[in-house]
Length: 84
Image 1 (cartoon, helix red, strand yellow):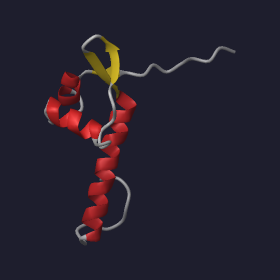
Image 2: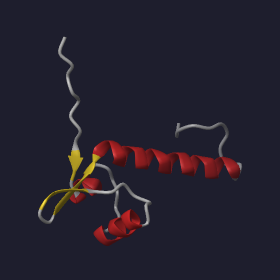
Image 3: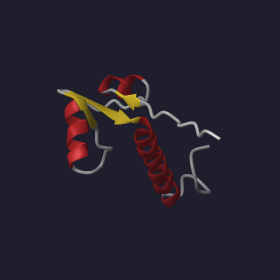
Image 4: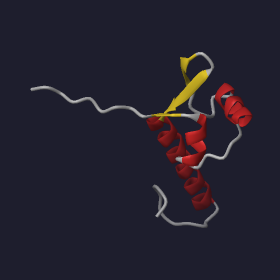
């Protein structure tokens, strides 16, 4: 039996904003990457970088969980997990 591979989507800097709603400037994203606070890009050609969509989705989920943990610690929400 032949196994099908799931393709991994690559996102451009523009798609980070348009598709994922990440409104950081390019310089902010580069700074966060240097600090290890944002997924690193992949060089796909000269002067061209893109990001792995699963890594960006994971980063967004971590931000949601951090927000929820902070709200719970402040007594503003009950329970745990993702946003409801």
